[in-house]
Length: 205
Image (cartoon, rainbow, N blue to C red; front, side):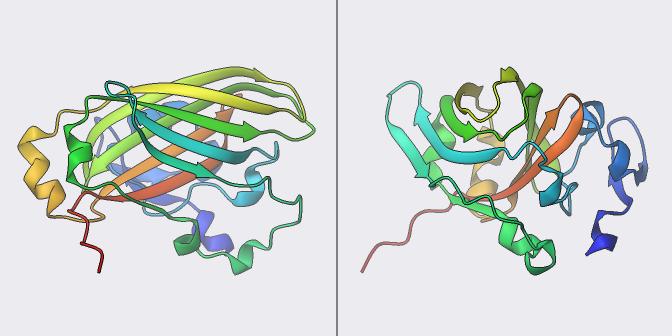
């Protein structure tokens, strides 16, 4: 498992493909990425602040309709054997259907808890791609979390205009991807990767 976190090649903005040093991966490097990552850029054990995501809700800002509401119970604080967890197990998948591409603005609410250490300057950088083309990126910050608290973070997204790509996106399930990086005081502590399917839902039998 150690090899997967070594240096690897990635295309960066205004540059040719170059070697990326995982140990020095910082917010500025994340901002300059122009293609989705092919692997996770940090280990689960790098989350030394024990940030745990408890609830994730998405709503359409124009209609107020809740589109997604995922809740998890707070996990037990048990050691994680990373050798038993494959990248495929960490990969998130969302099936939204084609109507989602008509939305203009969405709001997300992220509820999370933190462990025994205070969390300063929590920065989230989120990048969305179709195939290897960057569609849009977002950046948000949460200044401070008190140790052993549960926090709520509401974020408003202006969705990218994909009218010229909509048919291709709908016809290409799981080719829309995202990387979300969480930094604490400039150090990467969590990296989530997701795939999206906007094809029509299969009718239930």
